[in-house]
Image (tube, rainbow, N blue to C red; front, side, top):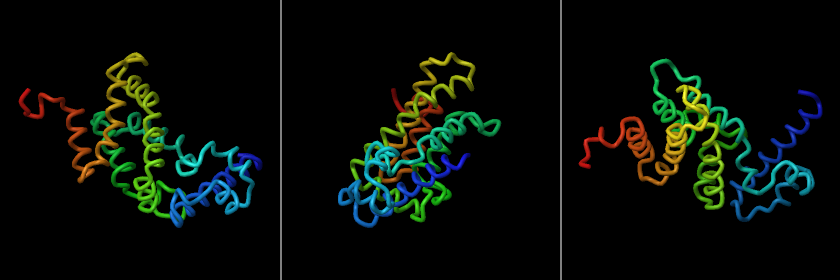
Length: 197
């Protein structure tokens, strides 16, 4: 990475870190883009070159997150099914992070980040939309892994339902139990649950 790219990356990180710190300290709605730019010692115009919206400041690792989701399918251990791998990945990054600080590249812990997102409807909605934008990449990875055509509907359906399972789980009283129920259904189908038709 050249000097110019390093400087851009440092500016981007400084903006995201300043935004997250301010949002947690003062509340998302109380902080303006100008406040964030000032805290990072850049102009608002510069901030908008890096982040197209206020919500985007909070979700700064989208490419990395998509790569990790695809990797959960491609790099799973032998004998692990795709739904099992996705369940473990979603549980780790969306429900109960095993290494909280690994998901938030700031001094602020993942718990504070999670509370901010869940407690702010605009961020919760934006985060869900960004999470669902990974559906096509995940569907392609599933299709490739199974030898199906890239437009395979079963692969697309599995990708969609696996991603939606996290929103379903996060809305439940016991998120982990809800996620397990959703993935048990994805893995085994309705008839295997023992429920009456």
